Length: 286
Image (cartoon, rainbow, N blue to C red; front, top):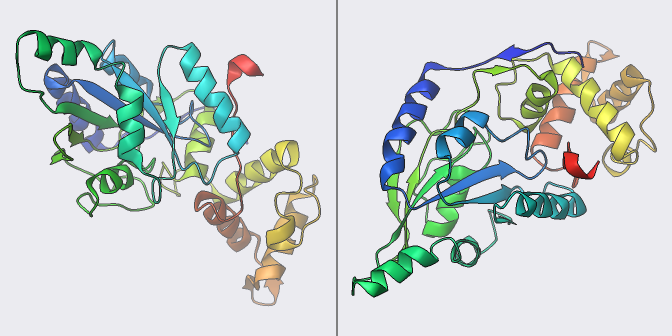
């Protein structure tokens, strides 16, 4: 899919960036949440530069949607960058224990300082950041143990900052998802649209589905076998969409609807029901 660049920056995102910058002075730790299927594409360089040298851990979300071996490679990749990373199923995993374990070395100086001056141990003030639909609210609901943050499988659900006390060890600041203003690299925009981090109408559905099928052809040729009885992805993309349409009864009049099949394919990938697939691998390992 040829994309020269995409501009997508709702006004509330600019406000969110300003507020993040204001809060950083009182933050001890940043939890940056990335989608495990495309960690680089789901990493906002604006947030990355804003965080600077603030202690940070990376959570690769949607572990149950991604290629397990590829996710391991990503954890190694970020370790080489000097950033501790971990992954989890946000719906089922015990995240607070993983967060404690991963962040403890970064918070050692804070704890040593408290002990040195006889201070009572203070909660770690954590800022949770990430682009839309990477799982920030689901992460918070998991660690709180009950629903406190609004969730939804679409971009732009969280629109205001929230301080949430987790326990005596952590206080979290949730922030709205923020995308970069421009995507000079069209492949990144395509990945984000496939992940559901950009509105579906930003890029054409048919072309997105064609790109997804091409990714399956390159990396997961038997990806659609169980779901749609397609033995192997080939170059006849319209033929593949027609098979999906016929399998699911997606018709326009009496003819199979390629547009409806394209929409279904993208939705089932985004929702993780097609299987465990990743859209990109660490560039240093390619």
